[in-house]
Figure 1 (cartoon, rainbow, N blue to C red):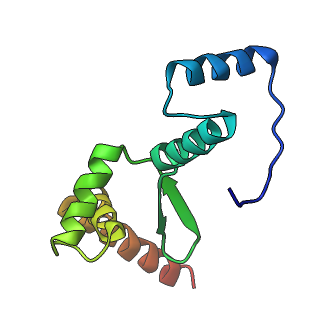
Figure 2: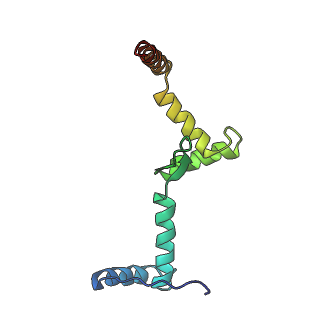
Figure 3: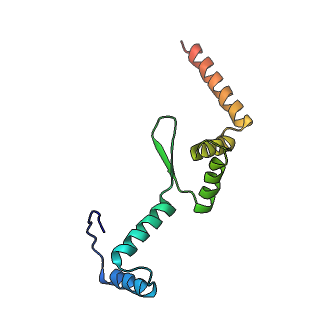
Length: 119
């Protein structure tokens, strides 16, 4: 197999655990194969979804696989353009209700009037 080699130091206890797992799973031929499978599974499970937030950087969220599959299906079926669009809509629904939006507008209006009064 071609690929770049990495080094990993493990305690004997971890190696025994790995070897025991491989013995019970004949479809896995060696430690390297198990490491590749485990790393990919970890990244797929806990990698999260990245979305841009108003140009201020990225927010990483962990989405359970079942929910991520539903969101990806909604994109594939044409309900949304991207998974990021789904997440943005959910956040807006939660944080920008009509009541919250009116409160924010009122607060900004009063701050603006105070700023003018201080001039």
